[in-house]
Length: 184
Ligand SMILES: [Fe+2]
Ligand SMILES: [Fe+2]
Image 1: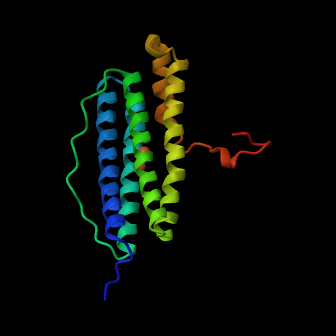
Image 2: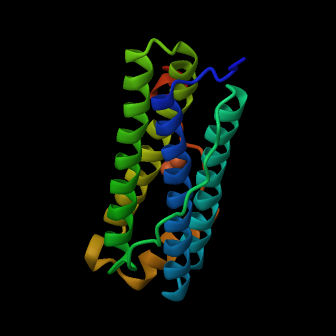
Image 3: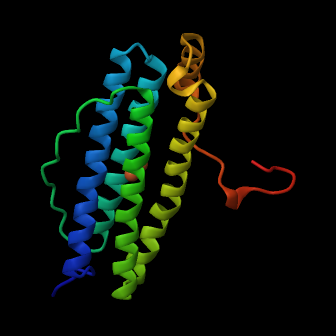
């Protein structure tokens, strides 16, 4: 008896997502090492923590495939792209990477919807919410860098930004949790 509750297409797209999350983890590891080499220990810490989050995402998708009786295929992952030119470039690339990942999640949602695979559709919603958070986190990074002076940021403001990011919370408040008493 076949107990696989996933279609071939869904199984394939989920396996591709496992690889994507693993690749994101590697990219953030590489950005963390790059930041550390430039003396930004706090920013390195930030990327290392986020690398761990991407590994957690990978684990969730992997577990879901198995839970539904599907077959997980662990594939090779690409080497991360070359190091960023500067902090602005680093944060912009991070943002673009998160947006690309959101697109990949939406493709899973679209396919699950087309196939009326409501279990996968429901599972993927966790990632839809997670991507709102991830994009917001990186938007905040870009905002903070802008406030620090962008490309003309002084050493002192970069020092403070680095210190802040070393201790910054990994969670961001979302609009859905806002109220008049607690706007953020
Ligand atoms: Fe992720
Ligand atoms: Fe992410």
